Image (cartoon, rainbow, N blue to C red; front, side, top):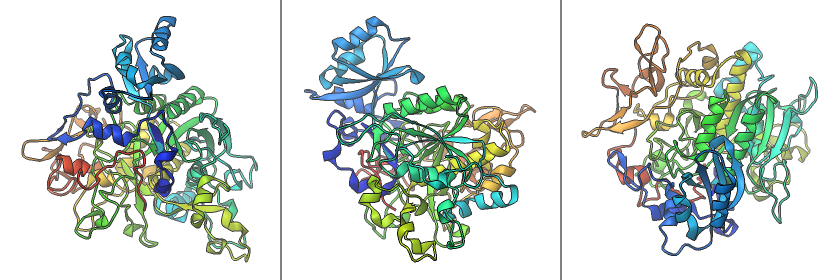
Length: 594
């Protein structure tokens, strides 16, 4: 299956006719696997099985036809003998993924069971389809304040944009200083096809837009004839262009893992401190075996901050019903996408502006909600501006051609009579746009404090975020996470965790109460031997992260289950999946509009 950019704007462009035949549709495999949650447990497949739920579905077909692409985790190193064993099953190795001790292979579907039975094979995961999932972003995150007060621009910090490529306009050059391109280097992991050449350029338009949110310098809208300037968060940060998505904004898990593997190998050479992943795929297995999650953890453990889009599957249905919450769309809990389900990653949901006042911002209806499938990790971690974001335009790209109305007219930001400027900026919505806001914020934090670790950065972002509630005052940590990004507050934070700042898991008791699992994943031991969040001295109350109303009491640590998270039936099948109304759509086109 293929990976998807986390961007609702392109949903209508993905049709079954454009899917490659060797990949099985995620939706069909998920339905066949019967994936539901009952009580507090997943009752379809044991997490101890060798195959993820998508591959398991293919194996159980009585008459498997065609070919399936899978990521095979092997015990030890590949030897001539093990390669021969794979070849005997007609498995074609097309990527070697040493970062996760795996190879990606295409194999006849009928041979999957034999592949699973090989003694050196420890895990099979579908090579899943992934999709791509301004004044608003800068002003409502506080980036303008830290620039005015501290002059922080992200200078010297390089962010890897793992996406559809970057086609740099002057806004991504170091204009007025060195005048050189701030795209430090580019590499491509998308194979050539009959219609698209192998290139590092952005044939889709998504990656350039994301790069502009991180590091646009506003050059295309600055000067005497302009009355609005569209800046990125870290306007002098460097961009490392890692192309893993094609012109339609799609790719595979193995392409993304290859990109992350290259980043880890070259992090010192190119001073890569941050990775942005505005892409994802439906969760089909625990994060402990998911290849994309494992690659993310490898990068994190190598000192690179990984920021992920939560996904755009937060609506229970695509039509408005006034009796439903979430502005009539209903709320699809359990809709976080991989790799945003990984407890190490910083997972970002999207907010939308109502007016020019940050205090009036709301959650975007499509923003995916937690907890994560199977592992029940409390996600997202934080919310950031992501709706109707103006950023860089990639001319002649798929999105520019298919959605010309999203181009920003010159009259919106210029007093000039010409219409030529309308091809400088473009408007998109999605958690794809919220994730690079946080990635840019991380670049500013690292510029000010170069020695910061990924765990310290995550803890500071979450603890300093503005705590959000619903308009009626109810809380919802699985919608808002730790709250709304506040860059000045994050820069002012001085806390330092002494253990991994992983997002905790949730569980439910017999009375229906939902608990944060207080194990070593969140509770450490501070210097005085007392229990503390992530081992941070002086931070020993969960309310410091999720707000004063989110956690009811420090002794029981119970989240308000009456309405705050999932409504009246927290872990029931329909509450998590919305079986009869669409729920967290597991199809490869599960991307919702704004």
